[in-house]
Length: 129
Image 1 (tube, rainbow, N blue to C red):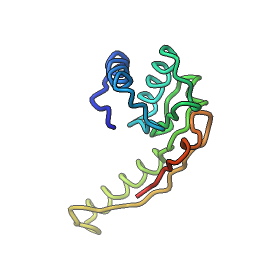
Image 2 (cartoon, helix red, strand yellow; image 1 turned 30 degrees about the vertical axis):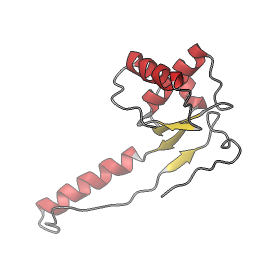
Image 3 (tube, one colour; image 1 turned 45 degrees about the vertical axis):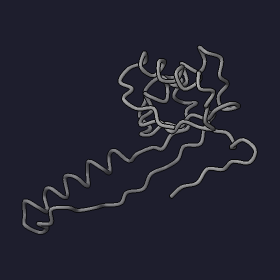
Image 4 (cartoon, rainbow, N blue to C red; image 1 turned 135 degrees about the vertical axis):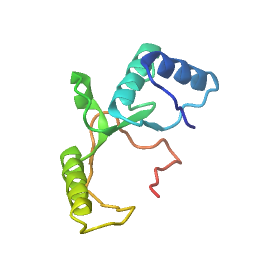
């Protein structure tokens, strides 16, 4: 189940209520960023869905400054390293050390396991591919 195009809290509320009317609550929501995950947590709190007991919520970026985000399970991105690598790549291109059109660099991330992630319900499992 995908919920997309959520640019503000009201759209998150609308999409989640629509999903819940179908009686289709998934085991977890892996949100596009921490802000969207916090909005999801807020909606769940308002409508009485218990996190993580009934549904886990996972953010993606690790930069939400809200106090509640300290509870949020999130995949933290290495923004300083991303910026450093970008500058290095631009410098390499400018100095003609690397003229490839597409360069891929792998950087470490960290899954910050906090209070919004629980085990899958019986008979289900998470998988990463």
